[in-house]
Image (cartoon, rainbow, N blue to C red):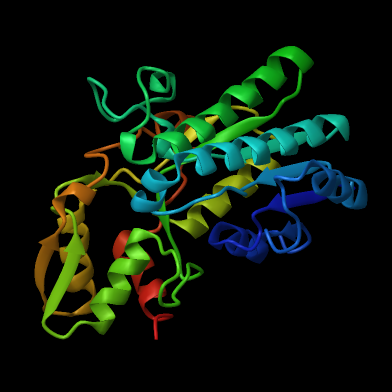
Length: 295
């Protein structure tokens, strides 16, 4: 019988997975410190998983990434190394590493980026250390496959949003969640950071969970991007959200230096061949699920 272990299981993707993989084992940072090898050993000895869905990572906003580059790099490298080392030691059949499009180069000559473009340049300076650490996970998984003959893989999703994100004041929120909370709490003006011009692909986190389940159910070993085809500017995302929710607010932008990477859209052509006819949740539909949960 298969035993599926989900690291980072208390996060928003983990919560979506729990809805469709209820029998899996979900652990979060309050349960185990994955930077500590002894705790990782205890985790694997206790549950002896056959499959590992590796969601766990140290994440944060642009400013925190800029201020603490060593911390973001070291913590993520430790977490990833420990999970892969323990998975190999305990003969885990399948590891699925969940990365992020921030691993891709800051700039390329042609968009959208494909999987083979990964090493054409360094990640964006605004989350350079985190991006490189996550890129290293792809290198590590490929290295295990090459040296040990494992059939592990990694998935590279675009930006995510979900009703399971943090809504508490002062907590780290993903962009769409923060946008919707500001819309709900604003009466006349919607104040956003940056210039509104960067382009982003946003995917409902429940869609990523469904892809992960497909990878397990069909024993897919290829690594690939996962992204909605739409690539909207931040301003377009805000305008669409206001229109879908029936709100009329004046949009004002501040601190243009916090724009981050101008664009990082990726192609899902490879995924479309592996999982044909997969249907993504429309942005206008997904944000209503999130908006309804905001108090």
